[in-house]
Image 1: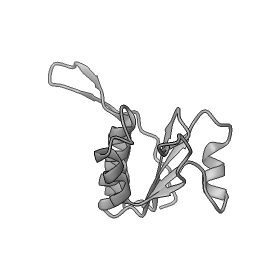
Image 2 (image 1 turned 180 degrees about the vertical axis):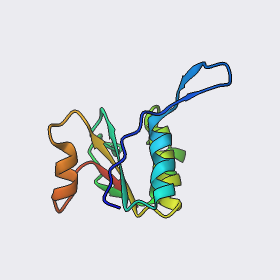
Image 3 (image 1 turned 45 degrees about the vertical axis):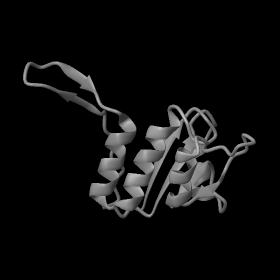
Length: 121
């Protein structure tokens, strides 16, 4: 209890070849296994944007799935959202996508009422 794990997501095969494992996927699996309260995924965008390119502060898992199907969520954001969906469905209460380019982004998420980025719950 009261630990914050920091993990380098690397793996290797029987011949010693090292592989880079998707950090979001690894973090989601760890959060699920730990029954974490929340997972925070840092990225280089504000979060999930609507069709007018405005930040969506909170969406449900159903809304996120619909946005992928409707092609409102595309490209590199799809694997992040899929990790969030899987993690939340496993019992983690919420997943948040945060803009890691912003100074103190994690503190803003944790200590502000409205949060920061996009929360999926």
